[in-house]
Length: 229
Length: 402
Image (cartoon, rainbow over all chains, first blue to last red; front, side):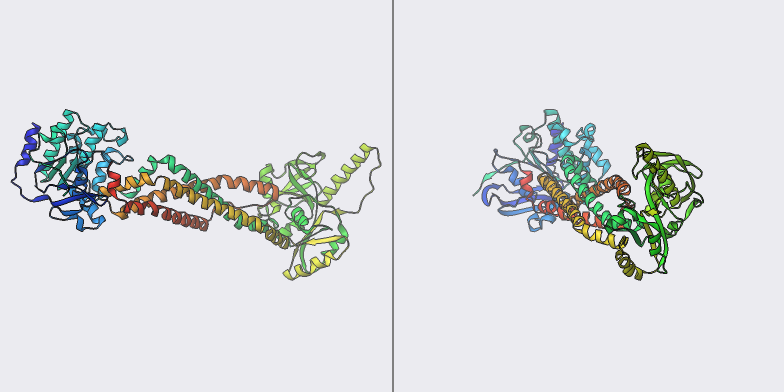
């Protein structure tokens, strides 16, 4: 069932390019470390970024999200190069247009799950869409824990909350770093289904860095990190 | 979500780190406020305490002692003066009113002062109830003393020997209350007044009893004596001439309460300055502790703020959150510190009233609150700049990458 959901991402009837990367060389401490394959993701498309541990997948995601600058190359979110912006402008662009799911979740411990979700909207000046947030909460089966703080959650619960937070603003691009690493098969399926639904319904694009075969099996397009030239 | 609830959530999450900053801030604010109150109110209280007394005439000795004993009613008398020649000194046009006082007895620790009705004129006192004595062993009670001793018109009480509570009671000579004075804010509020003849009568009887106990003859009638003469003058010019004339006599010395309090105030200036400096040191320590407590949480704060940046928050919003947290701590310290002052200051005021006769008004003024609020907010904003700037400049990837 979830396979059909994700497969539907291959329906390229909507052609606006949400995310593109061309000739991007990644760096760490000023030294080139890897080359990101060229990517052009339209609305409702998904791609899996693969590579061994330490191959630069996370660095690539940070470069695409306007967090860590690439050494060279061209990155565009909805046709905009975030690296031509000031840091504050990049932060705002990321908050509104990119939903990020990190390996280590990065939830704000001081506030509840529900507040974490609403915060994602309010910090970028959006009014939280309570009905939509509730539907995300229900879809990810985290309604029972909405009043808990992140440090009171299991790994799997925290990961689902992190995914929910990434979807709250209906972003143009969802970037996920190993989003199913802490989930059992059932929850992994639910999460993939939700990602697929959101990406389809909001005309977003999905980029997942993973080596989880449960994810790779559901996404048709894969690209692998390459060594720096 | 606005900065305030988020800052409140961060504070609650790290209350263990916030508590030392809160307490140190409260201590500093309380110290500064107590110093402000003391510096403002002590001179006023002293001035109120000696009321309209411009001049005290007593036996040769320290002028400050005379003022403390006879104008402020706090220390022991140094001796007696013959009444007639002393009264002769104040029978002149420069003196508006003058009255002798004779000390020696108390009622439950409140001094019973033998005097003449002119004393009420010296202090400008009015009756709240009843009127002056018209016969021996009638008493007029000061407003605060009446309240503290629970005395009413017509009530009888028995004085005891000595100026402090616990002396031998003069049970044969009960007093009757004929009047209760309205509050004056002066030392008169805390004492019981009676005719000077009543005091002489009781003491002659007491001395005769003691002589009998020792198997000696009763002492011969001594010329009338008093502890001091309190005088109100018509003109400040008299303050320059009269004390010198009186000091030039063999048996009397004169003290001007205003001069003595000013001298005492000058002498106490280093002490007050030291206390003020300690208060400021506490405040500085509080600020430093608050800064250190915030600095200690910078790592956690920078992570939280960096996460908010990752979510799209503007640096100004980060600064607003950091400042809101810091301002909450400052306001918490202010409230806690002022609450401490409101609890501690009345106790200190009671002790001063009891020991030194100084009636202090210990409520913080609007100016105090404005200064303290301004100071606390300035420190809070300055402290909040550190994490706000660090978070705005932080490389988010360092926080986000494992």
